[in-house]
Image 1 (tube, one colour):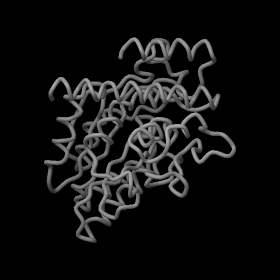
Image 2 (cartoon, rainbow, N blue to C red):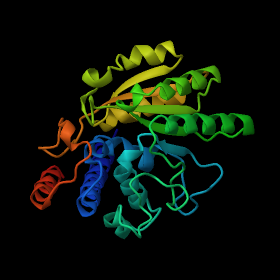
Image 3 (cartoon, one colour):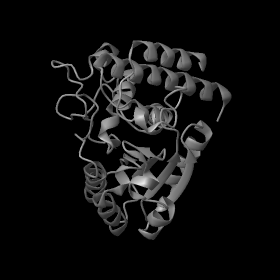
Image 4 (cartoon, rainbow, N blue to C red):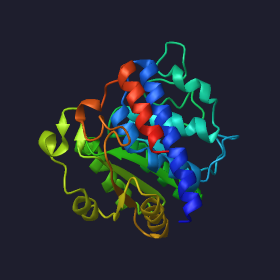
Length: 275
C-alpha cells in the first residue's frame, strides 16, 4: 500500500477513535474497548473495501455489513457518519432518549445499518442469510460481518458457520475481532473458544490471519477473502482491546464503561498524539 494512502487511512481511523470516545463520554455509557479495537478494520472496510453509496443506503446491489457484536455500535456509527450516511453532529447524541443512535444498531432508523443487532450470535446468522439471498438472486454483492471473540462462545455462531460452509457462501466474509477479552475477563478464562483458526477450518472456511492495526495486513486479508471461491472466508483479526488509549489497552474493565471527564481528556490526548 502506498504510504500516502496508508497515512490517509490512519488519519481517518484516528478520527473514528475520537468519535467513539466522544459518543461514549457524552452518553455516559457504552462500549469503548471493543469499538476501539475494530476502528482500523472498520475504516478500511467502509472507505476502501465495500461497494456502497451513502446517497442511496438501500441500493439493491450494495455490499452488506452486519455488526454481529452489536454493542460496539459507536464504531459503526462513527464510520457511517464519516462516510456520509448521516450528519456527524448526530454522534454525540448516542443513547439520548430522542436520538436515532441507540445503544445497538437499528436498521429502521439509521441510514446505512443493514441489520439490527445486539443479541450475540444473531448477526452472523443474518449475514449468512443475506449471502445466500445474493446467490439465489444471482447478485454479486458481498456480505461482511464482524463477530466478537467473546461472542464466538455462542453456539449459534457455529451453527451459522456450518450453514455458510454447507451453502458454499464464498460471497461471505466473517471478521473475528480477536482481542482476547470480554466483559468478565480473558476469553480463555470465561469459556475458552480457541483455537479459532482450526475450528473454522474444520467447519469448511478459508481462514486468514491478520493484524487488525496494520493497513497492509488488512488490505491483504480482504484481497485473500475476495479471491477465494467455493467456500466462505473468515479473517481472524488479532487486535488490542481499547487500541490507541493508553489506560484502556488490554483492560477488560473498559469493555462497557464510559470515561469520566478527566479520563476522556487523557484518551483524546492519546489519540491526538498518534495523529
